[in-house]
Image (cartoon, rainbow over all chains, first blue to last red; front, top):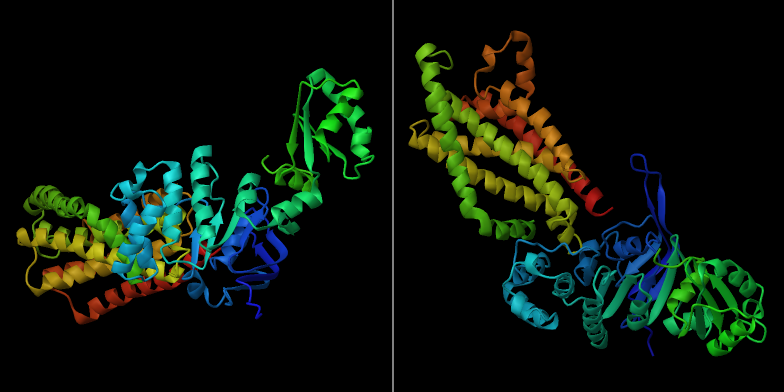
Amino acid sequence: MVSKPPLVEARDLTKIYPPRGSTAEFRAVDGIDFALARGESFGLLGPNGAGKSTTMRMIAATSPISGGSLRVLGMDPMKQGPEIRARLGVVTQDDHLDNELTVRENLHIYGRYFGLPRAVIRDRATRLLDFAQLQEKAGDPVETLSGGMRRRLTIARSLINEPDILLLDEPTTGLDPQARHILWDRLFQLKQEGVTLILTTHYMDEAEQLCDRLIVVDHGRIVAQGSPRDLITRYATREVLELRFRLDERDTAAEKLRTSVLATGGTDTDGRVEMLPDRVLVYTADGEAALGAVHAMSLTPLTALVRRATLEDVFLKLTGRSLIE
Amino acid sequence: MLRAFGYWVTRYRRTWRGSIVINVLNPLLFLIGIGAGLGALVDDNAPAQIAGVSYAAFFAPGMLAAAAMQNAFLEGSAGVARAASFGAYRSATPTPLAPEQLAAGHLLFITFRLLIASGAFIAVMAAFGLVGGWWALGALLGATLTGVAFAAPAAAWAVGVRKLRHIDTVFRFVIMPFYMFSGTFFAVSQLPEWIRPVSYLLPLWHGVELCRTLSLGTATVAGSSVHIAYLLALAIGGFLVARVTYRRRLHP
């Protein structure tokens, strides 16, 4: 079997923004390595300011790299920017749609930027409006669309050049749950059709649903990578027990738990107790058994919930912080 | 460049009717109000004081150049800053178009708008009998060049502007004084002697002189060449700087 070159390959990739006015020099991306194969869905996970968007911009050939090397579709983004951009689809954090133009005109203008013939744009626009479930809105000005519709239009727009890779920077941030689910459904369909997705997110459920592989970034560096399941197995336990205590009881309960067998592991070597401002998380293989142990310590939590570990827990373990602060 | 130009034309197609009405109405009001109204007063009290023509014939080409400056500056600054912050440039940046092409396409569109607005202005002047024949075509090109000489440097600067009120400030303290000291409403020779050299350095003065001599039919090859060279230098220099500043802003 001939191994194909990766679609995107970064080695020691670095981005330093020069000082501007009163702001000092800023190292947004600090030496990251990754490779992305065709058909793979790849996620960059991290809190705000971790360097996700900057990494995306460098891949999209709209921000020059400061150090290391980067190849996108086998090309050098510093020298072949326009050629690379011609084969990418990009969904930026802000929509940047033209409010004064209609839905269809927005697609048309965008297609023209890629130099596509009008007839081709017309065909694809019709298909993409179907895909984005915006057929009935085709002739309406964009300013009349809801937030979810705008996002779907932005994604449809980014597909007008039938890209090899689709880059999505926080595709569902700011949407209500229903709109997010519709969007995920659309993105999942694209993934099924073999489109390679690269997305940044700080939503764990999004990453779990859409990404085959993740890198977790913090302060411009990679702190872990692997498949979502992989990361959870490696950095979290099978189950998590979430406890809430009465305010006056909280500190003593926390102290008891911290020094208990639940925190040191006992039979379960991965055992760990994490104190958050509003609740206590007990990491364990068996949530029910752990809850039994809590009751045995004669602690009485207000609420107790046993759930599966998620990427949120992975992130907490890796950085000591929660993702959405 | 033409793809970027195409975007602005698509937008313009929605608003061109209103915009043409303004293009015609604006000079009409100015020529009636200042040309005929104030002009009657000037001509009665100080006949043949300036350039030996009626005040309206003197004033109209000055206003033509100044209007081109104002339109070009606003489109080249506020229009560009908006496109760079949340508008067309943002949506075009991920496409194959390079920042330099976005600059060129937008400036081409501004040039096109200047041709239309100046054309409407000159048509109104012709209706008042203030210009005619081939000289009108010369004045049209002169006014358009005057505008571009402002639009290109304005765009080069404004693409990096993040606060739109900075544009207001420049408009008030740089562009408005140009009106006063560039011979728009009166000849520079009527100003105190010490201030005149400043006027001769102002780009609008070159634009006004170019348009006025062309519309009055008194243009000389030597004089016009100097004005054209000065304005072209600003336009080309502005574009060259814009190539750099556009890239810096759009590909950070």
